[in-house]
Length: 366
Image (tube, rainbow, N blue to C red):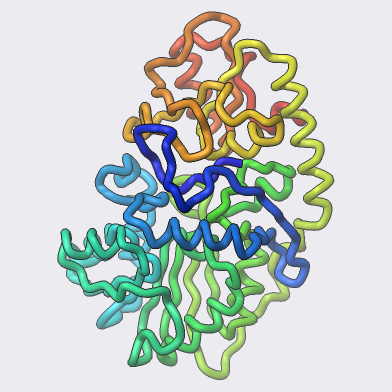
């Protein structure tokens, strides 16, 4: 499927990064989550992309998400920093440093940890302190009181080991705080829209508890974010105290691939039987389009105006804006996002699309 790692003005990609890559997924039964298993070649592409000066989904002032998703995570981090009052916080995978700047504007110091050229340039532009490397043991000299990250936990190849390393870097009483994707609904349904090459982990509430508990954390809190389908997680390192995991939800990953096969079949039936088809929310539609071999035949739309007329690597058509939605009565839309389906559906109806022609994967399975 398309290897989403940047937005650009043409279909011309980088000479050393593939435009499409396969997706291989397995179930981690011990911790009840889905894991992407890239080969060494595929990891090479992903790591090269991370280290380039490109916006790989990072929040920045031009991303079009600072007042929505960005505001949600920044307020979450600020609330937890105010709650625990660390002298210094460390942000792993800080990207453009938007959360660091937000904390600084509210009187708190944060240091970024990120290996990318993209982050290095933003740190120079905004003046925040950056450790321009991948996070590892020994990178933080003194035990940290507070470590946080946004949109990182789902990108880590060995998330259990990563959690143990964060635990080891924290002082007694230290806090690990992060926002990550909530894949519970998609896993229960068999939805494949959650697949991205960079998102190598797809979590449930149960998996978050089990992973953090195995790393030694206690007082684990898993809450829903205020925007989108996300987890807001806070856990503490308290020596001699273990988290109780007996009351968490039962496992849900078993049977996922059978459910996913039904979802793929349902999409193909819609795709083959629909003439005037369009897709809304590109990143959530690409996995389905790839299953039918479509890498640029179906128009794709998104409401984020900063994406308008931009190309995502591996797909031959540019992203169109909401304002250019076709108004003829037989226009049909597959909406890749279940989280924002109702909101998107209303916006399409307002622009003249027949309600019965707007579907999600949930509709196609019913």
